[in-house]
Every structure is written in structure tokens, then in C-alpha cells.
Length: 401
Image (cartoon, rainbow, N blue to C red; front, side, top):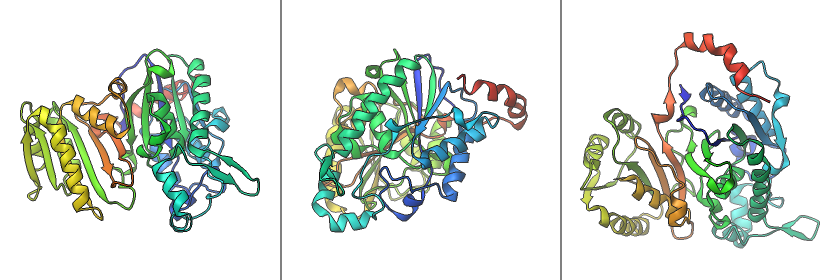
């Protein structure tokens, strides 16, 4: 199975987070430490990612200067085009992870328990958070500094690759900043975008400028077995699964199969379109799901009331709800979670036949957009014969530099 994207004349940027690292597996802050390297699982998932990206033509590949990202990029390239020299990958200091020098190498729980005020500020107000550099008596602003670096990277690279397709293999925090700066999302929403190991996101820039950025896919990781992103912040609060109305019968069947093992507590849909058909198929094996139909203009109010009630009543557990509605409503829900205005929301390319996910951990943490346009609509199979026949041609066309 391979990633299948619509034909596009815009500048297209595909983002991949590195595979699982040693610090990931131990639950440690990484920051810009270069001691963290890929685990066996990290290499395996990077290999799968290379397979999934086969068939796409890239004009250039960029990665971070940190070795966990470089190891992932080289593994991906080795699968896609084994005859190409790994030295053709461009490493950039601007793509390093969020710098957290005082915390790198420390466990998440240790930091939470021993630096409660700093931890709270980092989680709730990342744009205001500052950190003292050990033994230097100077301060940095991790989120703001990262966004500045990423802005500089965009200014350099978008001018260089107008109308081309490039691959960036970097870090979770860096990907958040890349997506945010491309969509005009401010640093206070740093923690509102989830990035899984080897998760794939796709940005399009129709006129080649940063201001024209559009989000096509966010955090697709089904190729490494993660069909729904893992819940964050202790796995509590409310998770909303969002499905656009208007899906085909084949797409509905695929979505129903993906959600078959997910416990869906409640479901909301619009009365006036085909949402009911989608809901009935998806929840046919979910006998305990509470289902309500509402008029389209009432949906946001019912949704907001439902969120407040569910979080209040289930703050220590994860409750999953399903909403089936028009694309515009789903874009607005995602936009609200990301602090986007109505003009910015139009930069979200929500597609029929896909699934979006938002987690609301509770009142002390902002919403987290876990993924957008997830599902098999972006997967395309190819038989072994055509793959063998095209192998030489692909290796010549993957990269043009």
C-alpha cells in the first residue's frame, strides 16, 4: 500500500516525524539532545514509511541536524531509492527540535513533579514560557525561538522549490511549528497539534508563498499500524471523531471497519443530509452508542454543551464521541481547536471519506487536533509486477537534485 495524493501544481511539502527513539521509549524529554537515536521499532517504522511513500516524486529531501531524524530520513530514502547517495539529503540546523536544555534527558513525570510551575506554564502558555540555560544565567524562549527558526527555513526553502515537491523528515515540535506557521496559527497553540512517530502531514502552497499554505493531511500513521492517534495527556477527557457527510458507500464501509473496535459513547449528526446513512453503518455494531440527530444550525451549540458535560463528568477517563456533518462544520471545529479565524479555516482541506480527531483533555489543557483526513482514501495498492517494472524509472525520478 502506498500514499496516494491528488495531482497538484502547487509547491507540496510532505512532513514526516522521525521514528521511535530511545528517549521516546523511555518517556524522556529530548529537546536538541543528540544522544537519542532510533530504536529497532523506529527503524522498522521508518522502513514502512519509505514503502508507503514509494511512487511519489520528490525534488529534494531535508532533515534535521539531529541524528534520530537523519537516521529516519536515510532509512526512508534507502527504501524509496536505494541507488541514491544518502549524502544528497540536506541537513538543516533550522529544523532541530524545540530546545529544552534544562529538561532534556529527564523523565516527563520527573519534570511534572519537580518543576510544577514551569511545567504548568509550558503546557498552558507555551508562548510565554522561558527556560534558563544551565550554567549560563541566560534565558531562551523554546516555542518562540522554534517558530522563528521555522519561519527562516520556510523563507529560504519555498523560494528555492516553487512548484516542486519536497520531503521534510524532522521532529514532533518542529512539525507543529512548520504546520502552524504555514497556516497562520500562533505559538500559544503549540501543544494543539499532535505528531506521531513516522506520522505524515501534507502542506500545499498554491502560489509558492508561505501565506498561501493549505493543510491536506495531518498525522496520518496507518502505514505503521496507528489508525487512530494515541490519546494524550494521560488518555482522559473527550475524543471527538469527525466524519464529513457525502462519503461513498465504499468509503463508509472502510470507515466503519476502522472504527469497529472503538467504543463510541455518543453520536451526533445533521438531519438534512446523508449523515444518518453514515452513522447507521459506522455504529451498527455499537449497541451502547447514544445517537441524536439535530438540525445543522443547532449542531455547534449541542456539540459545545456536550463537550462541557462530558469533560466535567469524565475528567479521569476518555470518552469517545462521533460527529457526522458537512465539511464546513468540521473545518470550523478543527479551526476553533487551533485558534484559527474564519479566513484561516478555509486553509484546511477536509476531504469526504476521511476521519478527523480532536481530543479535549480538560480545562487545564487546550484541545489537541490529533489528525485530519485520516483513512484508507489515501492508500493505493500496486501489484508486485508493476513495482518491479517501474523500479529503475522511480529511482531516477524520486529526486532531481
